[in-house]
Image 1: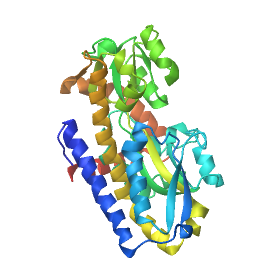
Image 2 (image 1 turned 180 degrees about the horizontal axis):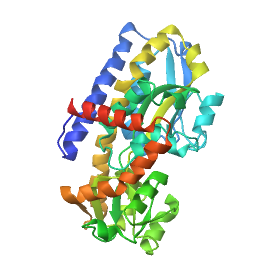
Image 3 (image 1 turned 90 degrees about the vertical axis):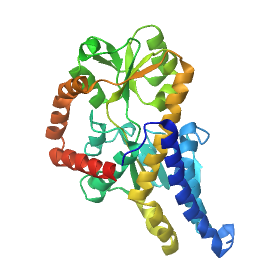
Length: 350
């Protein structure tokens, strides 16, 4: 699944993907209007404001298409925080407070060790391909036991985090001793393996810490750079050394799903699975391309550079112990890792 590196091409592809599902959903109107009273309300805990850029760019089109298809049977209504947050949304859905929810799995505070395979360094960077690969692991039962308490709608990978620093990084030795903000344990271990000193700082305090030189860099994706305006105080990005893609999911209360009408389940079937996962992943490609364009607008000095192949290989070798430790410590880790690599490669070629 090769694509142009240009932001406009990826945006166009993502929009085309959404167009196909929206058209499929709109076809449901052909049967004519049905009284609104017949519809089942589905409370969707978004964990983000409905006016946020990420919701409007990535998730709102999916919800709109689902609602178009379900007209007369159900309506998905977004419920933003404080109805549910990233740390409690799983419990809200399982308990039935929310009917459906979105979660970045690492933010829930619950263990998803197998699903964290996508967070390993150097494993991948394409959210569409990564989402397909992660769904296939779920579908084949390799990670599905981590989701037993819910009805999974899709699983996706978020845009990869990359190294962003104040000073220019040319080689591995330039990272040594730098205080770098990490986003999770795996990225912290990877930074340590590269010779840096990982630091845990809340997002809300990171801008000031960077401005004052408390930290010299961080790992983040484009969405984070724009949202917290980190691009204003950082000048350099290593564009091809990836520190993992956080896994996420949209899921439903299992009992609520079981109570849906047969027709509602038939409609939902078109929004459950690999295609649904792929489309969220494709939308993230366009969203991330726009983010990096916005970063350049924040800071004219912002530079994105590629490590040459031989140098990139050194970084991969340095972080290999992190991958090996994950495979050893995770039940079935070696098989999960190899299958993810295999499915990623297979999806990438299509």
